Length: 174
Image (cartoon, rainbow, N blue to C red; front, side):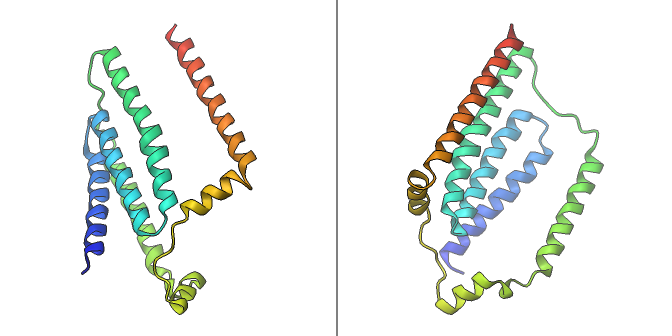
């Protein structure tokens, strides 16, 4: 077993263990911190899969934006109410049953797929290409040349959504 495989298994185990710990913790703040570890582990798995752009997007959007916002929201809510934010364990049976059923369905589907018949895998085997080149530079050039208008429109749309969210939050505090 190579060093790359060992590191991959470490990140995969870290991702699965932190995701399982999210299920069993009762403190919402701890769950949010564990979600950071899970998202970072998923980003590492993306890197090993050759999807470096997805890994960077995962870190920037989910860890850097959404999750930090969630943590601040939980921390501010915790301070306002003066008590710890926890979850109640009334539906553990149904949650476990649905989660295991979904896992079984996904595992069965993955085991039924014959990956050797996929055209891009056959092409990579014929050409001897195992590791892809980085896609970040290509995507960056495409975003700043051919797709600059949609990129800027999406940025303005996100800015308007942020201003609207701040306006709604301010109105609810008054």
